[in-house]
Amino acid sequence: MKGAVVRIIKKHAVMMEYVIIAVLIAAAVVVAVIMFGKNVSSEMNVATRAMSDANGAADYQKNIQTNAVSDIKKANEHEKSMHNYK
Image (tube, rainbow, N blue to C red):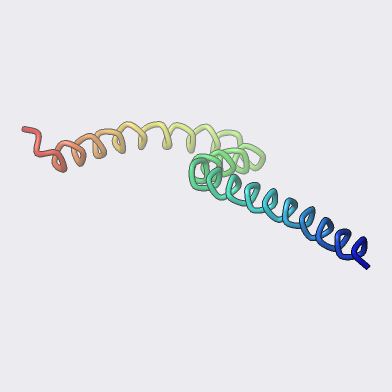
């Protein structure tokens, strides 16, 4: 009887280890999506356009690069305004 109880406890302990591993993997996926989601999305759009129309993909990539410069300027202006720089 005592041996059966020990086996059940060990079985549940192993199951908890798998649950912990699954939770850690899920957390890593969430962090990766948060960090890289926008970049991956824009690159997938470029790839999709490249498969359908080569000129469209080049124009879209150039548009992204042009917008990146203005986005950086806006971010710097916002940072300066948040820190009261003059």
